[in-house]
Image (cartoon, rainbow, N blue to C red; front, side, top):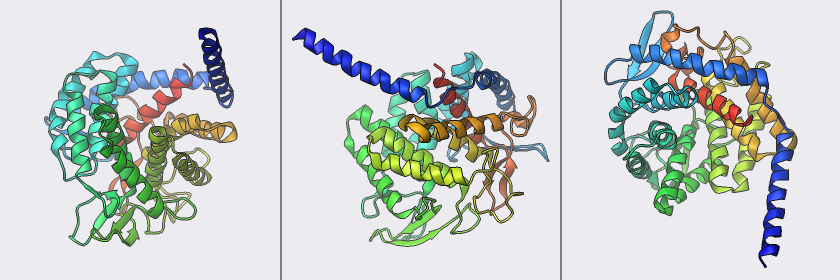
Length: 399
């Protein structure tokens, strides 16, 4: 009996290894880019030492304006606050620079109070990109409790009639949901695994299903903002806030959708999410320029002279590097090669700041909110975070 069981286990293991081997043949890491990535992480560490010096007490980095030399920071309740500690941790993991870990633990103490913030949907960005990474890379007592409290706060914004987590607070007859909200679901999946409470899982799945039904057009581009009626769940309006027009495809929104449905497949293994992610990827890829760093809106009227958004490029690269692992054949190869090209382009002098410049940020040429002329053609803290994550993911394929 033991012999038969051993043979079955061996056969299953052989099949698994053969599957992994066949997938590995679909793409191979570029040795020269791997060397460059190691250099990028070392340089990023030196940049973040400068960023630490520029950071006002009690605040978090937001952006820097090269033309004026102005460094802009924010309080812990702003949606980008979690990216700084997350970036510090990604760099520390690659460089073992203890000063970066010390800075992470200092800033996490300032961020912790946001675990009880029920006025924002961005707790996934704020708390999972920070405490979630810390719990995975350098855990400390209390990190899990912070994350569970954060998940409870996020779940409090769920409306079962609408089937979504509310993004922005609005008038009593409005319930606003943005595509960015897909990124906050990872925190809820973690909470179910940690607590055994399936309500978090159910909220995440319901939100993703509602968004998939209503947010996307027939070509798998997405609207930025949907306005639901809070009592009936009816869709009242589809529009943009940060894109060129209501019917345009705001690029970072498409990146959020790609990343979000990729993580949905990872967490549920439901193939409808893999299909959705693949369709979104196909839309994005056919609209990328030759160097693969996207314009800020895929329908910007001044393409090809329109500004690029390095932050959207970094998010797309990171998402594709996960998505390629769930695919085989040409899809896997195309996704991997596109991500590789984005990293190569972002690593060039055009997008990577010279050491000692850019206020300490790594990437240049991000676009935050074009319609409001806010954070346009500047570094963005989340651009750095997803760039570092993309490089880490790329390295993992060479292990």
